[in-house]
Length: 507
Image 1: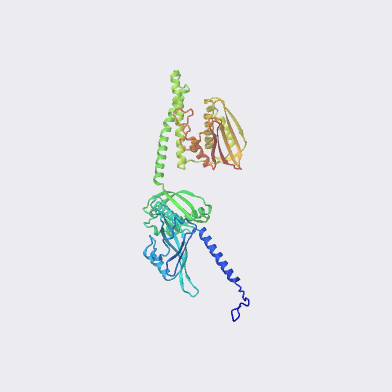
Image 2: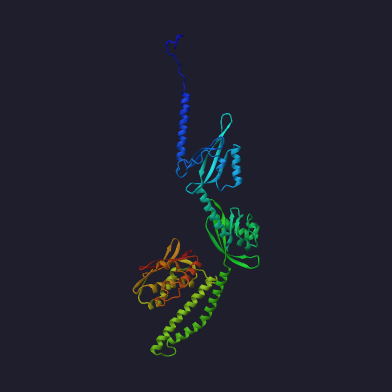
């Protein structure tokens, strides 16, 4: 404080409260620090344009600046920075947004990097205005979507391949939604129902295409498939537009989304008409040949039997041996013919099963007794039985005896001399169970899957020790299944095998 002569008389002053300003400055500084941290840690690109639409900022966040240089962009007008691969219409629309100061989202553009790599960006921007409403530029982000684009490309390529397989498949294919409307169908499927255009099928229902009774059956199959979630298959006859009939193997499966929601059903219809025709011809041939063979073989067996029994006088020892060999092999031929006839009957569903209430325990005991003669041919074997009495089932005694005899003869043939054969009849899980075990060589692992197939033998060589046609187990399985039962086995090489079958118990 000075007087009029300039002499200092003292000091005066005032204190101004700047707390709010400092708080604002601190908030701005904190916000800037947060933005820098967010930008450095993030993978998005950050950019700004001034009022002339020239780049003032281009940051690649935490990405390598040497790989993503930005110095060549600063000061460049956005219009002069057109990426390769953008068509004229898309680029003009983007420039119109900039010149009109309109926000924009998801502008997809490629960018070539100095190292030759190409990245794809999804660009978003908003215009900036000051408090007076004057345009000051743009600010926005660009997200690297290169991996997404690559994944989308792979998906499109995969879909294209699947679509090509679907459309050009030689079998009929379709997809229906939960309400029964066709969503997809290929031309093979369309042709089979009398159409040359799949668009005539898509959007229609079963009831628009098939006779009403058939449509109701197919619709119920769809519902069952969707409710159970199981793949189903069936053989059915299908009338073709040309008047012929096609036999098809129809496979149906549920279409399920990632979250487990059932979205519909898909189907594949395989034409097996020719295959069924060949099978029928083969079965008819086998049946004819077998019947033609059985009569002369029976006569030969009878004649040789008379000679073997001495009814026609004694023979020299060497001739007797040869006749005996011929007699045994005639029996083998007759067994083969009978087995082939049984196979043909089951294949054509012509095997008659006479179901009667019977005691499976007594039937097993009778079969064991009947096999003593066969047992004698193979030397000494011990038979041990554990038979629960009075186990009643519904069955055909002749056919079940055939199963028991087959399993028992196999056990005898494949058991070592002085071996033990164990026969058990019991109740297992409410079913009658018959099991026959041996302590023979067991079944090789690689053969187990084929053991019930026709003509299957673990040792099929000419020098095998045990004879047989390889049809017995296949026939036994067919007989057991026709009784509503199951047949299976357990085996370990070197320790023997156990074959068993189960049948429903009846009161």
